[in-house]
Image (cartoon, rainbow, N blue to C red; front, side, top):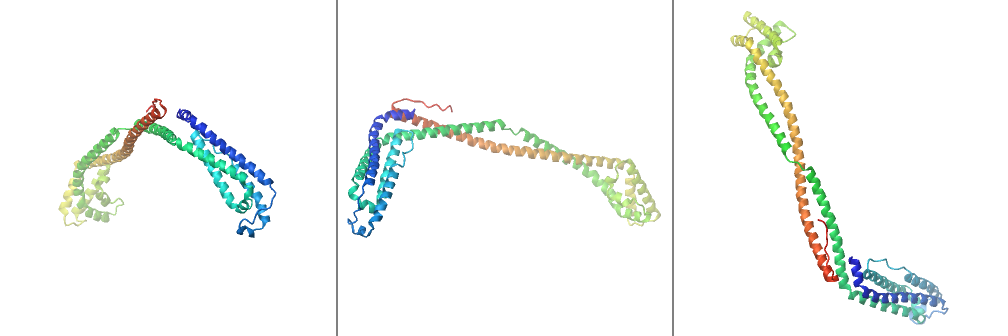
Length: 383
């Protein structure tokens, strides 16, 4: 719509420029005709016009004449400027091409200065063509300058329209990304539950460990004084299954009533050996007292209960490892979610900023359009 309205506004300008462009076309035809006429001239070069050229071989000047004509023709036949999107830009391109042609002709005259000077009196038609081109260039420059403000306003609106298009695309992309975050956004319920589960197991494990500590200490206190006597007993008896090994790991050894019964039998045997003097001890009474306590049937229940609690602690430790692994996984998800939330905040700020710029640019285009083309428009971007 803007291109159409701008073209309508430039109707008079277009007509005036057409006159200048026709002069450029005419000058080009004049150049080509001048080339043909000059090519047909069969006269000797005038090398007496200047001292420098008196030293130049006339045959060299004559040979360069053909190259000079070929170069001029190449400049004029170099092609038309590329198509533009409107009359103003099209004529700007024509002006640029015309100036470039003029500059190339001047440069070619300099390159073939010897020919240009030696045949100067035969180049009048070239001068006429150049003069025609200069007048056309001046006319085109004048017309373009007259409408420069209108074009600049048009250009600002076109640039704003493209910027607006980019902003609308950016806005939609930001909104799509925001919707994607909303779709996958999660609360911290799972992480909270995982934290609570891990805390609960830690508390239970701590309580269980406290329950194990007392009986374990008591049991080990009974067996510890028997380690040295047991080694002596093993030495005396020479048994394959050493009592000292069982004494060192009493809770592991007593896995049930039968294993306890075997341990009890060995302890009573050691008791007898101590009483007979087969094993000499300084703390004989203390050791015999501990043996008596260990052989009490109530001890096996305490050992088995402690062992059961230790097995439960092992299972609970495995549960804690699993719970902590689950907590780590949920914590990682929460951290990812936190990053997404921050990204969402950034997107929301971007959406606000882009929306504001869209509104500003839309308003500016609407106002400029009304001022330049006397048409009231409303830009709808569906944002």
